[in-house]
Image (cartoon, one colour):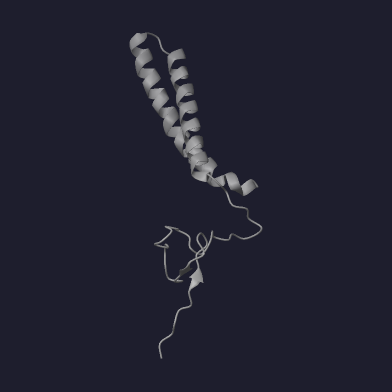
Length: 111
C-alpha cells in the first residue's frame, strides 16, 4: 500500500502545499513552512553579510590610507613618493583584508 503525504498549509497564503515542496508555485513563497526556527538562546543575526563587507572595506581603506601616508612622509622626491605611496598603500590593503576577515570571524566569540 502506498503512503499518502499529508498536505500542510503554506505559511504565507494558507493554501495546502506538499511537505516536499521547496517553494509554493501559486504565491511564490520560498519558505512555505515558515521562517527557520533558531535555538532560543541564540538570537538571529540580521544583515551580517553587509556588516562583514563594511568591515572589510573600512579595514582595507584605513590601513591602505595609513600606508600611503607613511610612504608619502618617508619619501625623498616626487618619483620616490609615487613609488612609496603605491607600495605602502598596497601593503596596507594586503594587511587590512586578512585582519578584517579575522575580525569578522572572531567577532561573535565575545558576545
